[in-house]
Image (cartoon, rainbow, N blue to C red; front, side, top):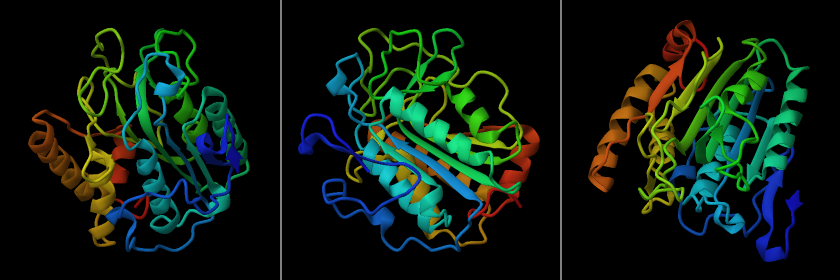
Amino acid sequence: MLHGQASLRNWTYVSFGKSAPLTPEASPRFSDELIANIPAGKKHRERYALIIGNEAYGKYRLGLPDVAHARSDARAFRSYAMIFWGIPDENLFYLEDGTAGLMRAYIGRLTLLLKTAPANAEVFFYFAGHGLPDQESGSFVPAAVDEDPFGSQPATTFLHLVQQLGMDGALKVLAITDACFTGSTRDGGNALATRGARYVPVTGRLPIGLVHLAASRSGEYAFGWDEKKHGLFTQVLLDCLRVAPATQTWGIAFEKVRTDVMQKAARLHFASQEPVLSGHPFTLSEFRKSRIRNLKP
């Protein structure tokens, strides 16, 4: 469906549980090597996805600038969700430039659908955009485009969101975030009028069954890669999956992604960016042994 604001030119593509083809306005205007020749996997009716690409923060003038390439990141990840991981379109919730209300609606609808999901269900969550600290808990907040960085009631914290999707560990959840946790922008600038504070992005113990793959450590930037029109982390991650043998494990894939992102950040931006893999020790051990098309051995 299309969600309209002022005029057709400003309309934003969204979908509720059905991933319709991209409109011409939403299609990338460049040759995107990431979505060329994606290895196809079989369909998995027990898999679900929530994918959010928040880019147009600046139009709300609340203190957060745009996030370069966040929409193209989400579009590329959606292609991998459908083709590489075989997620049916009726199980895929996709949102670009989500307001706080839309993000709550998407989370709520997917959570409702998961209540009737099979016991072996798996959930993929992807977010590209700004990450902010919740003022009360300090936990990472996937910021809506109309998020007030100085407000006191964010749309949702990361920990609360994944707890809803994970349903207390009953489901396997892979959460991937390409967002700065320091109030910074992808070009290395400061996202807020005040100096960004360094803090731990996710507070509280992650539930069993959840793996979080973050673009950078606390206090680091999550850079963009302008030549590729993607976030640096998303570009490296998806490209790694695209060319890897199907038998490769997540443990090997993550170490390659971590090394490649660190090297590219040093060369392109002369700064440090190190992706982080986190979760309950048992869950991480199982995840590292699983092949890249699966979330469990």
